[in-house]
Length: 242
Image 1: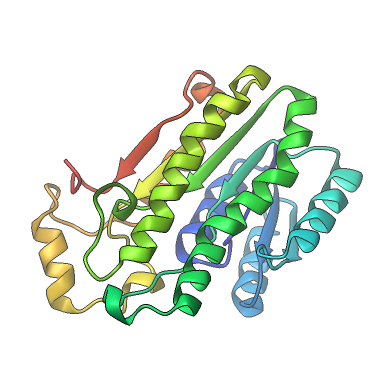
Image 2 (image 1 turned 90 degrees about the horizontal axis):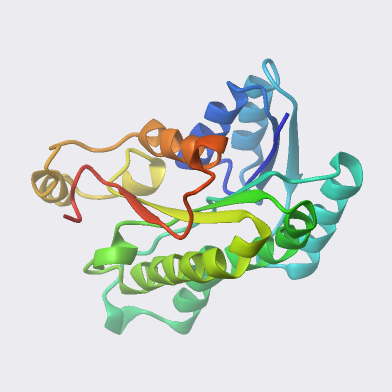
């Protein structure tokens, strides 16, 4: 049985990833920070079909991350798959961005992934195996107007993925990133109808994606079928970034 650690598990994409792994009967470690009601509801749902352990952790806090990972390893011995799904967005013109905005986005989208990966990787290296999947964004590849800092943070996730694939490959650890397009989640429901229509009209498949579209690829990249796939930045965007 694989042990799967998922950050951002209370979000729309993170929760669907958890459901996909739960269907395989894996043990899930679900991380949340503030949204207890959502993670509690998800845990109750998935506990019917697999073992679920939830952790409250501020991923920006290095000591909290270390304590959590140490607890997992001491109790469950290993982490087979790490999914860095935690993230936040911000829509603002660049001249209106404050340094607090900058810190908020970079801390939640980049620092959190770096912290978690930093403390999980040594245990994967000792096992000489592991899978890491980072949830990025199509805006990290092509950029988005009014989302310059968000786009930059996801571009950084893509670069982090490429670097870690090279660094961890000799230890048989595969590192890949997924760049979702417009996905039907709470994060995107604040977009205007006009903005959504513009993106859909620029998407060859002419629709919004679903969390399951992303989760299906996460499942594949985390499986033994993807043992020779690493350092890839894969779009799940209906063709938007072609």
